[in-house]
Image (cartoon, rainbow, N blue to C red):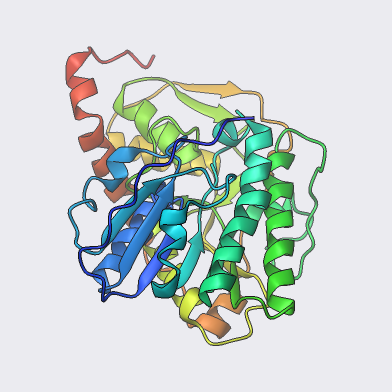
Length: 347
């Protein structure tokens, strides 16, 4: 098991009058966008992240903000006294702390499971102590390789509990159980978001997700990799839409005892996604097919009726627009690397 990261001292907020949000996993892809959105709303953010899979550069634009503080800490370990000292001001607790791409969460499956279970329990206890509302970012992976399509929240899933993805899939299912147990016991106001495939700026170029893989390979002039025959489907939600959904869910006034799907219902095949990336590149590309990973879902599309009814929320950014913005961000992110090496032939 990965050992807990050394805790750094938490600087006091320079603006102590702000409502304080604890965002675990705030240096990650979605977490960094959530931190920015909360700061833009005039709220304070205490970001907790071990930086084991997150990119510190995601926090670069946040560290100078008067409402932002950061502590480096692994939530599988008890929360430090410096975080507990902020309890009187904590208004919301957001748990986004877990690697979300298969290559990363399978790298240390024991730590992935403990992050989801032990880490979630530590954060729930913080929310209980502070009287704060708690939101867990769960995942569409709780549906496994679904036999029901699209996937409504009532669907109990088709998950392999012994396969290589179980550390994440079952870890999130266990985390949901903890959250709803706290809610039933009246120990905390709770919310659970089941997030479907999300993409956009601040993704890690090496995280192994299909959007980042294809865009980075195209920018580098490499062959584009498809796992399986490319007919498996996904539904891609742009990160700004996803964060808007998280904010709406946290603030929605209902009992919180129902998970809510957040994603985009526009379903496409992986091959169609590849074609859109190739069109953005303006060049031809060689396609390499590799074996499909074990337990990889064949179809994935959220039923968003509950999100519409409870939150009045729906995604707005079409895939073509979101991919163009993501392409531009990766092009800028990889600029130094691309200048330093010759383009590889994609024949």
